[in-house]
Image (cartoon, rainbow, N blue to C red; front, side, top):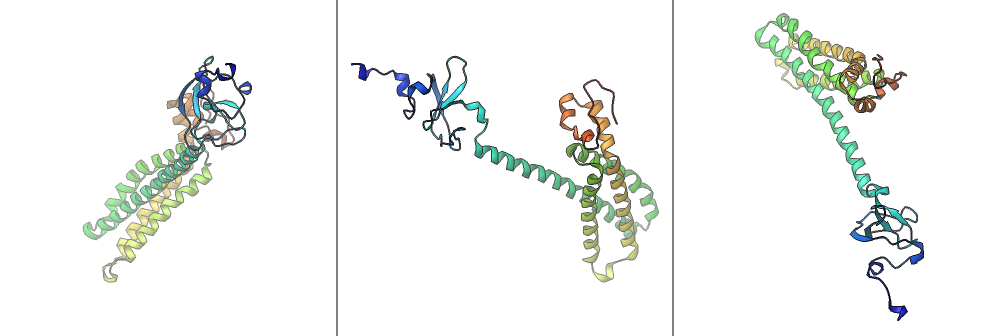
Length: 253
């Protein structure tokens, strides 16, 4: 009887929309998970089948509410997954920035306390200050500011300098607490002065590095980065009102 002749393929598809509004969708290869919605009517598509479109081999699905057929790739990610990835990216990036700030602060704290220890145990602050600030501080702190400029290319030099004040402030707080929490009879003015002087030299080197970091970062990106990576850090130029270099263009510092 004509009323009973239906194909097996059509029996596997949702029946909410007329067949005339939707083409033959092909083989079912899976189903949509929770969080997918129709881009037209926002109907919840949880458990709706995913087909391989026979002509173009696209993954497609059909909304049982409005009958629209759409490529599954259009949504790229489930909305919930997209939000989770965005939130996780912010958390991870913030953790890296915080780790850099605290790591630099603890480095400056350690150098400053070692200056106080030299005064306390060796009684030879002159020899220490002739070596450490002018070698250790630039070797560590200037690369840190260059990495910060590459990692945060849209921060202009003024904001990069403001960012550098954070680890300097943390280091100052740590050094102050270190001395204040000691026994009053155990505090020596020479030790406090040595750590304060080391902290001052470190802060001066750090701010100087922040002032020149973007220029150094531009040189590094031109000499060592591919075009794709250079485009990712194009803010090194655009944030300062410069034109990013082309593929084979001479460096524009």
